[in-house]
Image (cartoon, rainbow, N blue to C red; front, side, top):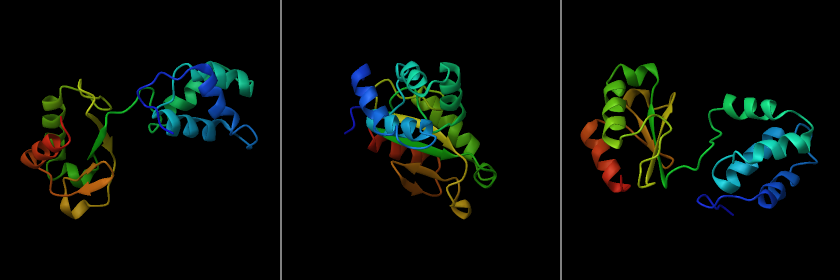
Amino acid sequence: MRHPHETPNDAAILDVITTQLSLEGPLLPMLHALQETFDHVPQSAVPLLAQTLNISAAEVHGVVSFYHDFKEVPSGRHIVKICRAEACQAVGANALADATLEKLGVAWHGTTANGAVTIEPVYCLGLCACGPAAMVDGKVVGRVDTSKMDQILSEVGA
């Protein structure tokens, strides 16, 4: 069950960690389970993971920071991803991204102050012929210009 806006306590974190303990090489499954449960990998989980697996906290942090899909803070209620691949860049994705970030007042991976939207880069959505492409809560949208993005953002409450 997801509790993205609650700060998980050590007992809740350990409950998630121990479900993966019997797996071989359990760190990644543990991190995925924590993110699935809490919508992020809580910072307080790092020393608990290190102690449980008898590795250093630096090793745990290194894995969390290496994989871009692991988040250290919960996401907004809606995730908007803008394609950053070359095909989309060739048809205006950079300008779209710059305008969107400016409008939201956040940087990449940032969440709006009202918690409505988290904006993320993605490096190909497979809609190259219809770029610039974006993904909104898992749904791919093509030919996104600034007016279409404004419409998307208003629909998700940004």
